[in-house]
Length: 195
Image (cartoon, rainbow, N blue to C red; front, top):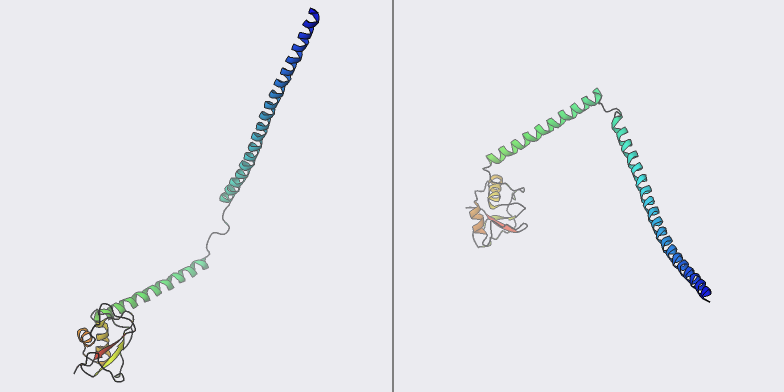
C-alpha cells in the first residue's frame, strides 16, 4: 500500500506539475504572440517610412534635375529689347506730361492766393425773388453748397465770375446761424450783392 500511495503521489505530482507547465507554456505563448504582434506593427511602420523616404528622395532628385537643366529660351531678342525701350520712353513721356500738368495746377493755385476754389460756378443771373434770411439787402443770389466748399472759395468764385466784391464775412452775416467750419452740402445760402 505504501508503494501504491507513493506511485499515486508521484502520478498526482506529475499531473499537477504537468498542468502548471501547460499553464506556464500558455502564458509564455501568449506573451510571445504579443511580442510578435508588436514586432509586426513595427515592421509595418518601418515599411511606411521607407516608402515616404523613397518618395521624398524622388522629389528631391526631380528638383535637382530641374535646377541643373538650362531654362528654355531665357534670353530676350533684339526686337524684344527695342519694344521694351519704346515702352520705357512712352512711360517717361507720360510721367513728364503729368509733372508739367501738376506744375501748371500748382502755379494756378499760387496765383489764386492759395484759397481753394469751388468746383461749381456761381449763377450768372439773379435767382427768382431772392429774399435774404435776415431782412438785409434785397439784391443777391442763392447758392447751393457743394462738397468741399468753403466761404472763402465761394466768395472768390463770385468775385471772379460775376465781378461781385463779396467777403466770407459778408456771406456769413447774410446767413445767421451758418457755421463756416461745417457747411452742409445741399443747403442754400444767400449771397448778398453789395450796394
